[in-house]
Image 1: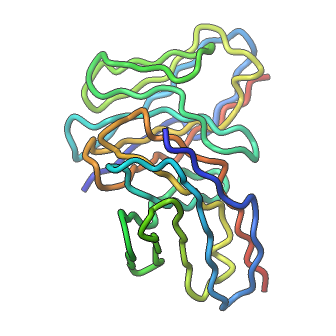
Image 2 (image 1 turned 180 degrees about the vertical axis):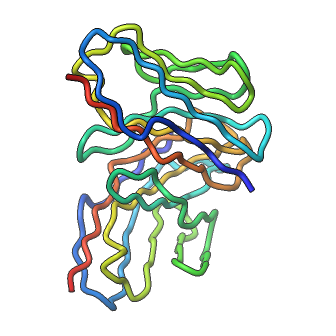
Image 3 (image 1 turned 90 degrees about the vertical axis):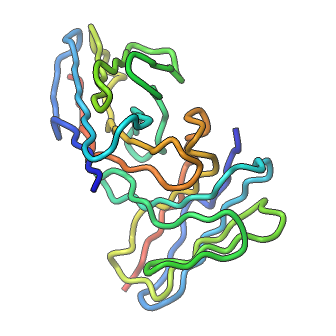
Length: 113
Length: 111
C-alpha cells in the first residue's frame, strides 16, 4: 500500500533562518506531489506541485521554493524565513489519473519567531 | 479552475443525518467531485468521490444531480467524532493545477 511520510511534525525557527521540510512517498511510482500551507483557521493554499523529477510549478510567488530530486521525494525550502511563513504545511500525492483521491501527510506545524 | 462554494459552518446533534452541499457551477466535463475530512493539526482524509448520480461507501453518500453544478455529502447518524472540517474538491487528479481546495465547512456535532 502507498504511504506518505512528512517530517518534522513541529518546528520552531527564528526569522531569517533557513528551512527544509521533506516528504517521501512509498508504494507508488511517478506520483504527482504537492505542498500546501494552511494558516490557522483557514483553508488549504496550494504552494507547489510536481509531476516528475525536477519539474516544479509554483502557484503562489513567495519566500519558499520546492525541489524534487528523486521520484518519490519532495522538499520545501526557504533561505530566510519570514514571520508570515508560519503555518501548517502539508505534503500530498496523487496518482495522476482522473479518478482517485489525494493522500496527505500528517503535516508540519511551523512557527517562525 | 472549478471554484467551489460551501457553507462556512454547520451544527448538528449526535445521531442525526448531516447533509453538506457544495456548489460548483463551472465544473468541467472531466472533473470529479471529491470530499475530504480534516481534523485539527492533521492532513485531510479522503472520504468519497463521484462523477454523477449517487455514490455510497461505508462512511458517507455523495449525491450529484444531473447538471453536476452541485453535490451533497451525506453523513448518516453523526457522532461527536465527526466534528471536523469538510472540503469539497472539484477537478481531475490528472491535472495538477486543478487541485484547489475551497474554504471548507466546519461541522460541529453536539451531544
